[in-house]
Length: 391
Image 1 (cartoon, one colour):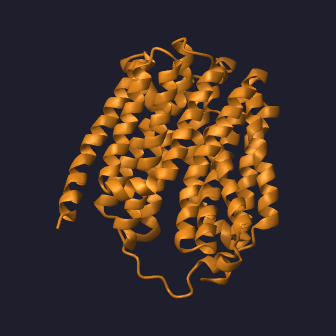
Image 2 (tube, one colour):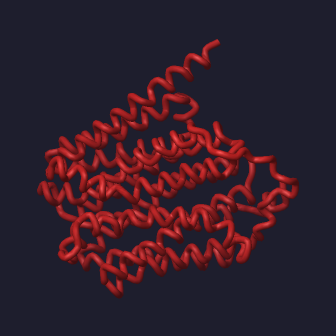
Image 3 (cartoon, helix red, strand yellow):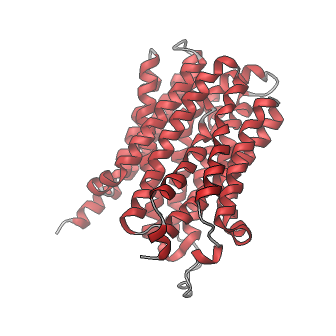
């Protein structure tokens, strides 16, 4: 047990996990898309929807740039800068509700989220070890889901005062800045690099890594359809108001929170079959949304999708680390980049489906079918793994 581990207490755990609440609020304003589309009629719907997804593209800039920034500022400094990007980029639209400016600030928010994700994981690994470290990583996903649900719900309630006022949920970032500045010790970049020389990494990524990246890209792209279209589905079909549409994202986040708390046990029980189950759940979520004739099935579908979403994401990330460890960060970064790009391009997927049908319920059913194909594709791997595990 290192000195850092001995001195890291409950307070440090709470403060570090509080940063998850900021990065988790990324999707808090997705339920505002219908109101923003009405406020900016000169912009295409797909363009307005980019406000919800463009931060995901810029997350990878933050993830890849955090080590370089930490060399100059330390990991605590990188985390503070990340929080500033998120907080400032989040609240500016409250005062200046101009679409081009909102688009730019969302890019900064994405960079901040990427920096924050990388710095947080590095500090968890540095300060904690053993079961405590595993618990912290698991709580990272669970609290992120809970924070996303709370932020989305708050944004939906603030909608009655104006769609731009809903961006006030990002003021939370300034409070977390104070907590991190006061209670997180400074950690230099060199302290997180092992003193001994790292093992020689292999060059050239194998096809399997690219395959996992492609699966991550497709799955995240499909799942994000629910995130950006659920509110529009609810309002267009007359199931409810934009505020109730925002609540659908809250239910999705609650599903993710539940998945974050149960992923470890589910993975140990189902092993390789976990991925097929996750994709089947995502398909079920879209089926509920597509066949919904009222508000409640859409909310239930959001919860089911959120659960499946936060099962397949850590599974694919963990599978990359387990199977392609010799390729180091290159393999992990490729899958993370595919994750970010998948979320970013979702509006164009919506436009493509719009060429086939303008009925959102039918688009949801088509997306369910795509997830069904992914689930079927994952089954043979689960069967082979089960046969190998037999004595």
